[in-house]
Image (cartoon, rainbow, N blue to C red):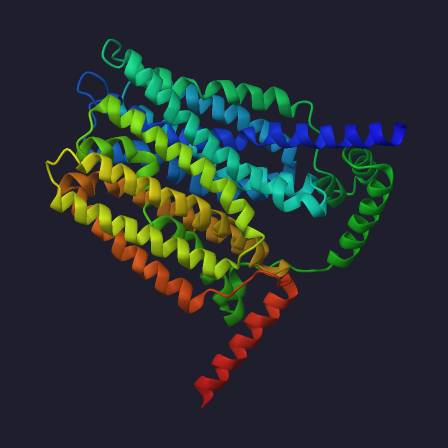
Amino acid sequence: MQVIEKSRDHKKTLKKITIISTFGGLLFGYDTGVINGALPYMGREDQLNLSPVTEGLVTSSLLFGAAFGAVFGGSLSDRFGRRRMILNLAILFLLGTLGCTFAPSAEAMIGFRFVLGLAVGAASVMVPAFLAEMSPAKHRGRIVTQNELMIVTGQLLAFVFNAILGTTMGEETAHVWRYMLVIASLPAVFLWFGMMVVPESPRWLASKGKLGETLRVLEEIRAQDQAQSEFKEIQDSLDQKTGIKQATLRDLSVPWVRRIVLIGIGIGIVQQVTGVNSIMYYGTQILQQSGFSTNAALVGNVANGIISVLATFVGIWLLGKVGRRPMLITGLIVTTTALMLIGIFSFLLEGSPALPFTVLAMTVTFLAFQQGAISPVTWLMLAEIFPLKVRGIGLGVSVFCLWVANFLVGFLFPILLSAVGLSITFFIFAVLGIGAITFVHKFLPETKGKSLEQLEALFRSQNKKSEHKSAI
């Protein structure tokens, strides 16, 4: 009986750690999604008076900050610890949220959104790393992907609160957008207080030579025999890694290293050029431009959030059943078709009462395959594709490029929408989608069922073959 109770205690502790730390993912989702409903009110003449360019900057400044947060977040957590840095992130989330809430001008809003972006980007690398290091091997995939679920849940909550506040207060309260933004301060406070009672990652402690604390933490989150066994594995792993030199930018001159890093960059960019974040950030305006009123667009946009959450559940399940390449290619084919249909229907049904409902149906279809196939595969492949030697530089550069592509989509979308209209804008994204399909089909290897060592051997052998062909 005592053994069963201890087992339950370990499971409860691990569940508590997972719930608390993934509030970083929830904040990531809420802060990227809330701008969707806040922009129509924020941009009014009596508020921040945003032009298409400043509207793009308000949205994308967070994404620009996230690119740098992602690059430096990993190295800071390596140096100071996962728990300590997530605690600091909670403070940064809170300061950025309050700064945006009380921003007196577009310039101040852009600055504070950049600060918020630093926290979002750092959370995108720190929280999954923390969860991976706290999880037992057999449950690691399920636990780590819960962060992706919390991200889309945060976006859904943002859409729901936007709809509630917009429909109840939008006409009477000029500053309704400030109420939408300030809600994010609550999960930031919860994250800070929650992380105060969460232990540090045992693997980080071991990497700093704190083996006594490593074992103590393992005994909190594992059964006694599992704790001892895993502690020995960590010690053996540290012994094996002694003397292994991590790759640097100079190593990009090595052909096989350069090839795998370029593929990682391509995976990150592919996820963004589908235009997913044009819908996540500007979904309300897309529906407005198609014919919905502001209130109806806010409510309709909740459907996008709901389908994103449901599709993520399906995507997590599919990852264990289907190969990465076919799952990604299928997702890209359907999303590109949906983008093409939005462009066609926006042209053919212009002014028709059927257009807004048609566009909503297409965005829901798009998000079902984006969040159910493309996004889960993207983050999983970025974690799988890099051998140990190039993992640091590969992930850092790839995630940086992913956020830069995200920034460009967020910045350029309102400018394109204003300059060429809804139809042409989505035709442009459809063309980019065709390019993404071509890239995946031609260059992306299948990583399912392959070890990191097998992937490294694959890239080395491909490099030797290409060198042989060029010699002939």
